[in-house]
Image (cartoon, rainbow, N blue to C red; front, top):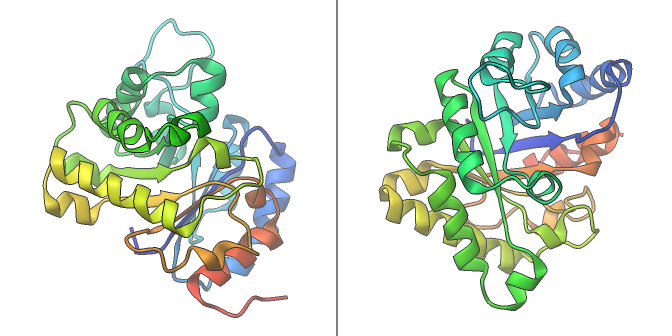
Length: 256
């Protein structure tokens, strides 16, 4: 990956036809930018992405993946299926899946291991709740999530891992962490990766921030030390706003 990375999480929004319209508007506005760009879409929109994003600089991925390899797991989608349709990445461990579907770290660990079999990058989402931050537990929460979600992985496999720090209290709330809070969290992540693996692994792993990032506030985060980019939620549904955010991030004049 390049030093600058932007991933859009479109969540349970947009139909296949709406996704095609989004891509047709979005790609021309970002095709000239020196940045790794991807969108994570609902399963039903993956085939559209495969066709519409062919030969572009925008990759596509899923928002979830099964922890199981294959078999009688009705409704599940496995890593092999995602790889076959062209997915380069999947989100794992998003706080909404932890909250609404009771996903736990060991399950997320299994998903990561399945993805590794098919060379799919896992975007591992971690972060603390407001209560945990207030109680001074941010470091403990982040380290526990990293330790358990990466359990059993070898250092070379971290090439297929992106860590996205998304404080739960800043997701979809309009609240954003301060630059200082983000920098502290990124530092904790890299320190824990160094403890689990090596200083080289800590330096090389891609770390993103997500939590109400918008065109009008992204400038506040551009110069955060050791941060590689952003995982963007609601703004990624609007082709113009999303492209503006990326243009601001990479330091290009915003196309009106």
